[in-house]
Amino acid sequence: MSETPIFDEMWGRDAELRPPYRRFQNWFEGEDIARLRAKQREAEEVFRLTGITFNVYGRAEAEERLIPFDIIPRIISGREWQRLSRGIEQRVRAINAFLYDIYHRQEIVKAGRIPEQAISRNDAFLPQMIGVEPPGGIYTHIVGIDLVRTGDDQFYVLEDNARTPSGVSYMLENRETMLQMFPELFSQNRVQPVQSYPADLRRSLASCAPNGSDAPTVAVLTPGIYNSAYFEHAFLADQMGVELVEGHDLRVVDGKVAMRTTQGYQPIDVLYRRVDDDFLDPLNFNPDSALGIPGIMDVYRAGRITIANAPGTGIADDKAIYSYMPEIVEFYTGEKALLENVPTWRCSEPDALAYVLDHLSELVVKEVHGSGGYGMLIGPAATRKDLAEFRKKLMARPGNYIAQPTLSLSTVPIFTRNGLAPRHVDLRPFVLVGPNGINITPGGLTRVALKKGSLVVNSSQGGGTKDTWVLED
Image 1: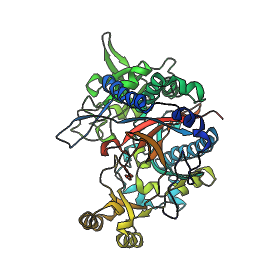
Image 2 (image 1 turned 90 degrees about the vertical axis):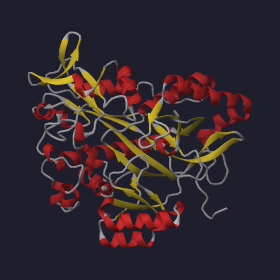
Image 3 (image 1 turned 120 degrees about the vertical axis):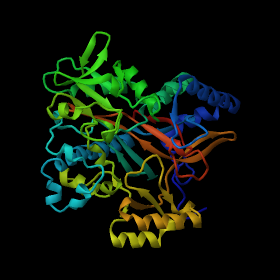
Image 4 (image 1 turned 180 degrees about the horizontal axis):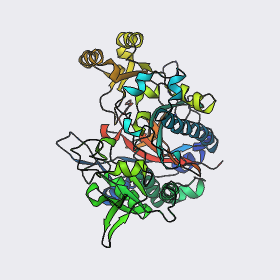
């Protein structure tokens, strides 16, 4: 056994059952393994029948895949969640303030807290948003903050998802499936509910409508059925009771964005878009885009539609900007960050690059705009060939990468053929931001690395999901 064993959220470091799992363990000990195996198969069938799939790009052998679901819940105490919630809210407020600032006076740059080129040379910075006043001053209406845990009281933010965070449909379906299959577990454990998220999302989006909208019309914009998250777009539109639209369903009519209906074109007040900035408006961004709405940015600049999330928010997802988040939080809130960042080397800086090249086999290296687990190197798991190839990429475009230490991510139990076994996890809580406040759904999406020893939890890389319980203390 290593000197510092990995922290297990059920058994701690010393194989002593932690309080949040006590009732679950009592139940599990009385269960028949064969029944649980049947329940695991039943859960997989529910997901298959419901159509809970995601698309994998660049894989010729399979366009659509089922996301593996594990029936063992991840359990967090109410006290732990309260502390996390305070840190998440602080961070989300700071991100919104940062976005407003960089598209207006850029006080944080003038104060020398962030270098000017980190903004101006950033591919995700949209000059078209300079001086634009989004309705209510809100840029990030929906945020996902990815967290990892390394100890009893030690959580880190792994990355921020301020552009178009995905995965909330899996959080909701995971809970629905668990409620159907194990109702007795919910009667024995006081689990905080998540089912109100679609209603909360609609209410929050409606509250962000431009002034003068008494009964705002909300719609969800999807790139279409071939998008990897199309299931989620359709699911959320259905659950909110709003229209799911594509770019060709929309046009600018009398200075407003309107959607095609059987009664003609009807104006939209709030558009929850799941289309990237570059494809949103062919008149303002990529002229070849067939996914967006010509002229929507002109309507937006005139304050006649709310786009959630606002164009240009992607700069807050940038992993180089992430490295400045402790300074960003302190600058805009006047407080130290309650949630720590993972220590990060910016490879654009010569000293940092030299250190990373010298320690490549020990570090995790990521693209600054990367997502989905693609384009990254996990040094300890890499072959000599992998390291040599990545070294060339790093030296050719150092500004495209950041590096971080390999954390000892916490584990939680999953159900295997032989019973419970520990696997590494992360957590994506979902946050709604409106003029009336911030709403954080208790729990979020737990992603789990199903392969023994693996640190990669992304579904596109073989990871799965599980229900996340936050207990009432």
